Image 1 (spheres, rainbow, N blue to C red):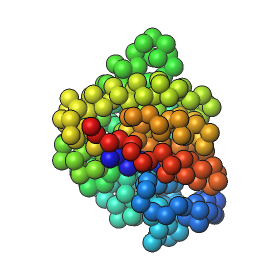
Image 2: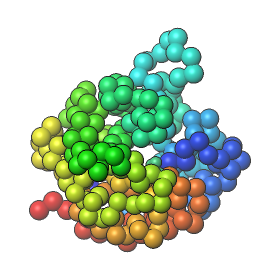
Image 3: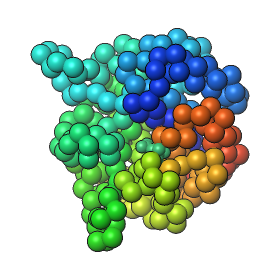
Length: 263
Ligand code: PGA
């Protein structure tokens, strides 16, 4: 059974006090640990402050970015080891904002992905097509290439150890209020699982979680999570409100039983 992973990507929002406050509210309302996994992904600057709040609780800590080198003269960057030292459990790579606003290439994303798993950290590899690419029916080609290049140096051992999560996030659905329909999302997720099966074999591919991201919220969480290959949500805007985020977590707890059971 694949356990849902619900993660809140806070992006470049919230000051230190607001980050601490949001984490405190989430911790206070979290359901009993076990049924689903839940994490928050604050700005790198507030990792330590948020870590102090969630210490001893089941809430997980993620990072939004990383550099692929181990150490050295890379002004402004942070290494996987630095994140691990900070108590981070997983790291995003390939988020569409980094690909499309900051100009990260598939190759750079692949190097980051490798560096993350080589450090023993969890990787959330984000993939997804733009609206233009979807209109041109290029979705599978684009997503397929992002998976291949992103995972070129991520071996089966990392995937088998549970260190690999994929997030399918159609660019046109991120922060726009437009959500992929459950059927559109399921189609892309099934394709991604086929790609993972080609690379890692069926058993491993069936164990890898594929999150959906793109205007996910309390109102659409249950429908998305009811899809066979949707194993969690990566949430931006809706994760900045404690009640909304907890509402999504509760929807996931309700949807978890029986999800992802392999025949
Ligand atoms: P959104 O962001 O929920 O605000 O659309 C999702 C993401 O970028 O991970």
